Length: 352
Image (tube, rainbow, N blue to C red; front, side, top):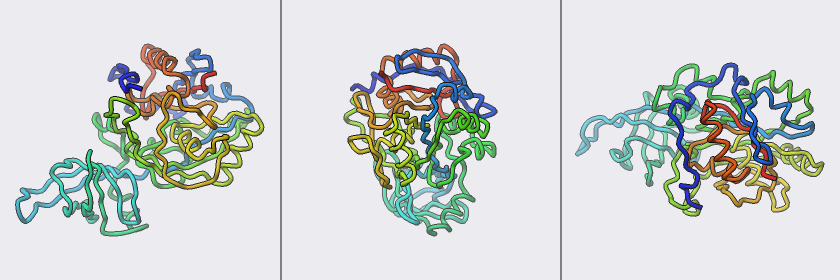
């Protein structure tokens, strides 16, 4: 399909720079299996789900992956010091990360970047600013240094308008996060609170958790003209034996499986067999879901509103139909819904 098929105009003032307070006060657009739209709120979720539905959450935890450093002046032909912005996006080993850096063109293999007492050598470069950084410490010592030095890695559409602050440390993390490794939040999960979980329990809605460590590649624009030419950045995911058993039981009993967020959806679809069973596993996934995809596990999805021309808008269009999602987003824009990571939510049922 043409990437331009997934384009739309979004007014700048609808990009949320802060989340709703409390978290569960956000609005939610319900898109049912027939494509009908209803304006609801996140607190209405228990009423919109059925007894026995299984919510699947991503329990990844965001690390402070935005680092500001300096490349000292080179001894020969390098000019002066260069300020460097780094966004870590995928761990390679105990001491090495892949990262997006700016200004990429002024850096070369062998350069050292200093982040206070933490240092990293550029040990590889590829197109688009994707850079391999090998740090001067490893394992838990590196994790501690990054935690002490870095800041919440706000999405570029927020970071362009304001810097990260202390409030983002709490806001840009789900209440159930437990597995360190993401450089972007699984943002649909940001809406959940203790009172919402209690209402879901009272409704008889079940829950389980998987893990996908979200990479910064989720924010990269799709530069190809045709979706077949786009390649996803790989992200690490895992489904435990307990989570697989819960999902398989729900399916065998005819109960709906409803991932919370596109990352949870991509995880379970990646690890599903052709007949829709989930196999416990841990591995990289680069699954790219576009219209025409045959969903093996997912019956509905709770997610936020996504960027135009993005792989995530393509994913929701695969679930509900492109025309349905264009109509839903047009309605959301007319109705003043707040978009992107700190914005409002959708509950989308798979097209009948």
